[in-house]
Image 1 (cartoon, rainbow, N blue to C red):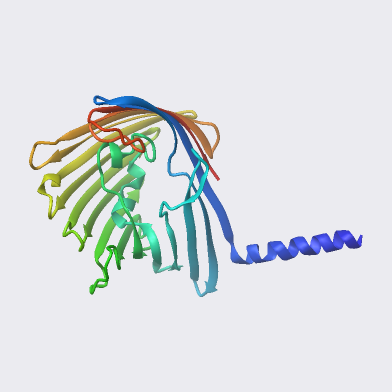
Image 2 (cartoon, rainbow, N blue to C red):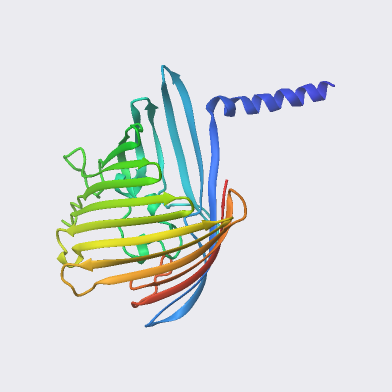
Length: 318
């Protein structure tokens, strides 16, 4: 009896701090088997860990509608077992209330957040950052404000205090802002981002628009981005992607097509992809993707253009 009481007391002592701190452990395991090839390189097989992660997050009620929030997230490479990879995932501390959310640390930019839900092949070999060359980033030294939801409208703004190698006199060396509207299946977004690279004078400006609509089992999405690079005019131009999906039962079929059109007209690129998802449960799925792109295929870095790839993978969220 005494041993039982001691065991119960020890369990309660261990559980109490966690309960008071309201800490949540979460993550995602995303591993695929990929086959990729290009016109000028040998075909390659690989097992890839695609933005797999583990994280801890928590809140503390400070009273009067104010809460402290924090998150510590890191990548984990399930392909070779590399733990706690230096992938620079979201990690921050901040405050939240009826007035919105203020946080600082390492976080996705407002521009990246504005169209994240429109990348229906996210973290696969057909991810739009790689297949079409969109410019999504996560900044360190980041200070961010996210407004409350105002009848479907949300604003986000962030600035990087120090994004280069040397000290800066200005408070924000780079900044990003976005407006996002969601209501009755309609999603609209507009974003602007300026990134100041004082070391190379390679300042970059991006404008991005996004639109999506969900009706019954059908989703359509469109993303447009205009980019201007101060020191390399060959990178100036615009990008776009049109995507769609159809859900039936536990299955999803999806497709996308997009292009990068440069002002110099010499290196225009395009890509397309088709995919199939099958939900095993609310947290787990298997999928297959085929992509054909003029850009590099995510995670494989083959030389040459006109790259093609096929991938089958599993995703589990916890």
